[in-house]
Amino acid sequence: METPRERVISISLNEQEWQEFVRLHPQPVNWLRERIQESIATVVVPTAQSSAAAAANKTSATKH
Image (cartoon, rainbow, N blue to C red; front, side, top):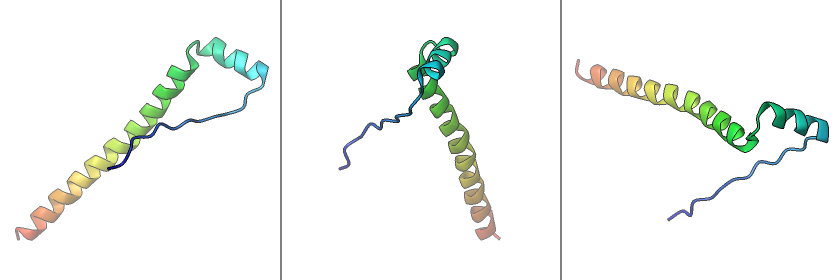
């Protein structure tokens, strides 16, 4: 059984970049997590749909 792991992303920002980022996004960790989840969702959904379509095409092809 695989043990779940949490991953950490680290980036380096100078003080001016950090202050500007926090000014725009007062909760930067939440903002970054949401962006990551959104990007994953946009990739996962089309893949799942294309897999379902491929399975439907395969099924209809075997019925002929």
